[in-house]
Image (cartoon, rainbow, N blue to C red; front, side, top):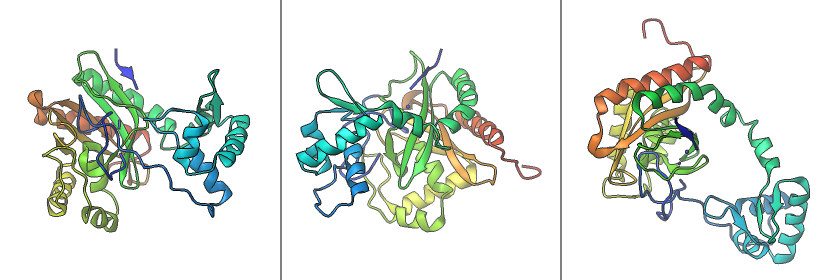
Length: 289
């Protein structure tokens, strides 16, 4: 049975491992933004957001002092804001005095159309793709220059990947990222290709001209292949998911061991899953396509 869980970065210095879309096993941990620097002039909403931004996959539980340090706020200000957020339910405090993200934020996040709603629509197609491959299957969306993983299915015999729902990776280093970047606004593509492009292995695309050629191939074939870009033992095949207005809203991928990769067989399966999700979202293919 597939087990639900997914990866997926913020570039700038290459970080320590969790999961990777186009990679696997001991993949570097999903890059995350550095804590904000102190600013006495920061607005009230900015200070609240800085407290919440102190939490990430590498720091899911923090004491008050850690929140103060990571948010760049004074301890007094942090104490006041944390108390307000805890009372509202955005944060929760355990018996040892450590704070965690609260369920109230989960309730709000569940309303995001590119989050749980998209996941629920896509899940049956992801399960079909898993049953066809018995490999890691992922669903991701683009947020700026990163992919955010919103679903992951895997099994005991699938290649080992350290993936979490909500993980982020740079677009150029992952299969889903390449599929999303290839269909993004041309001006954004050009800006992204201009770099800098963070390297995670010797195979990571770091040259803008090469990245442009790869994106053109993705558009031509309808599939993105990312080989050994985050770890040197994994390969991913991805395809874009379209919404009702035909714009690309997500990407689906399968991640396999590089040594066993049967790319010609994987591409049709991944494209079929992406097409099924697209239809479920209301997309209608052009006549004859």
